[in-house]
Length: 224
Image (tube, rainbow, N blue to C red; front, side, top):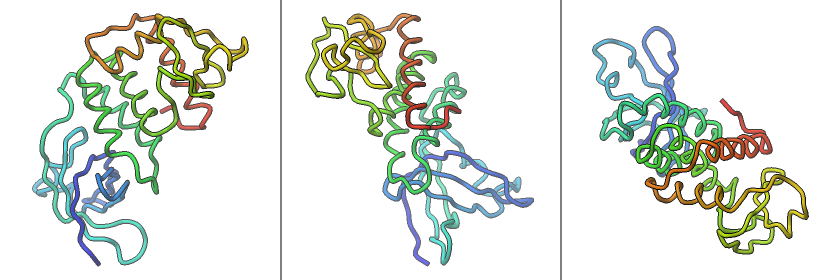
């Protein structure tokens, strides 16, 4: 049984028996993995204080002889990825990431780490929305705000586009279907995604959240 070492982000820790935990993690080079952390619930266990979500972790584990669950051998907790005031929003972000990148998917680590950075640089309300959209974009579920997702034509930010069936389309491709996304809204969302100092209005954030919910529904992704 080979040993592996990698950077990791903890998604959740599930109590198992009286003393152990089952861990779900994104790793940088091994995708999403499940690990048994034996004795981690005991008060004096060395892993107990290190197994924290929203921190950079370095882990070492033993691959399973059979099945898919390895055994945690070592964990080191490094830097926090969010300030304490954003920890609750970070839990929501982890829940979204867990749904977007399930078992067997290679992606997840880079997307969630980038999402934490996006959230950390913005206020909680707009930052969480921008972070989730960023994960959707990196994961390939959505395109950018600069191009029609159907014909790939670049659309100037002085022009409106249309939101139709969870796709952002130029007006030619939309053919009078869907909801018009006015130029100012599209520009502010794009700006906030790339520059924290640009602040979208409350109404624009509401539109953005509705767009995210439409994308999740269209792909039957859990909205938890």
